[in-house]
Length: 240
Image 1 (cartoon, rainbow, N blue to C red):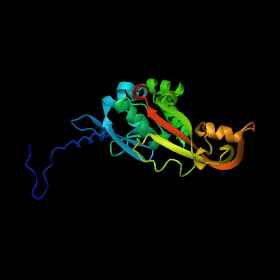
Image 2 (cartoon, one colour):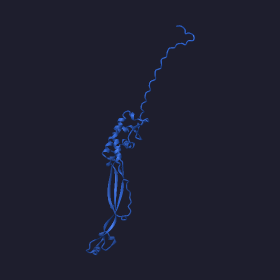
Image 3 (tube, one colour):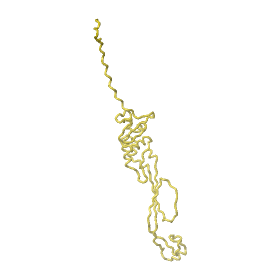
Image 4 (tube, rainbow, N blue to C red):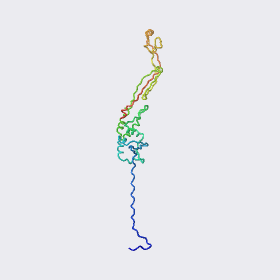
């Protein structure tokens, strides 16, 4: 092999081109927001709820299916699960899932809130919470709240003095006032304490009356009808 000529560059062997870098692997969907206590965050409508996975999957067919594997389509960037239903109504469904306590929406003045019962029933069907759905469909809340009424007629004002006492907050009273005309017995001898009480008249009064009929006069009196309302809750029914 001849020596290279003076001033010429040596010929070096060619270096192979570097291999192309592998394409980046797509990042996996973010894991659900969990902690060592096995909690999960739900974004329900505009509200957020934090609860345990077991709370959701134990009594709901919907959550049992959805949370048995990955739920990539509904996971938000923060790792929470999104559910497009009314969060204010879902609050009552979640309360049942946590405590198995049936919802009661009752006001002593307005009665049952039927619209809210229907809204919770709709979500109970959607989430597959069968005991809650059955309880609402059968309107068991009507049996959970019991109202007993009683009434009595009271005398006019000033007849019995002041009345005082304690009662429970579950007892309510209503008073209906009316003026009525009544017949009042008159003593034949005009004795004031005998007025209105025929049995108070004795022999002397009978002698004074003779063969005349009993005498009465019309008197306008105040009558008060007291209505007593007692509201009680049956805990066995509300527990399902």
